[in-house]
Image (cartoon, rainbow, N blue to C red; front, side, top):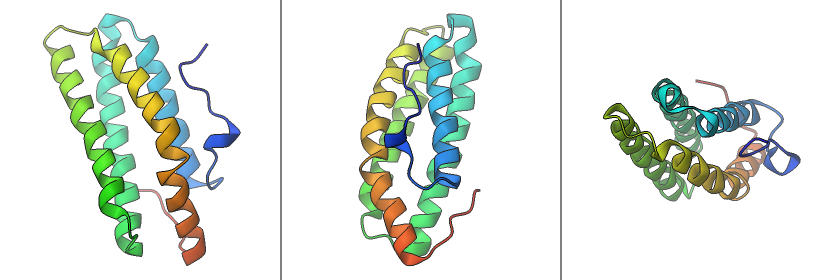
Length: 134
């Protein structure tokens, strides 16, 4: 059973936001299931994806002058700081935090997506903005 399953409560726009979030969920599940010797490359993939994911959202928020931008970005920065620390420890041979990171981020994401990202998706729609990947 996956750590986190894609479900209707996570659907925000039937487009680029959801596509990016589905990939994020898949990477969390892969990280959670990774064996110790598989963790580092999955962490690298997760970090690269998440940096691009968060940069994409930040670009949209900046282009729209989204009022709660700093709060939203602050949450993203916290996730990245922790992920980079777990990666540093895994590179040093301590892989025990991979599952813990996956569990914590999955819990955070379920709340973040259905609150902060939902507000962003609604704002995007109200503004008539068409979010693009990248």
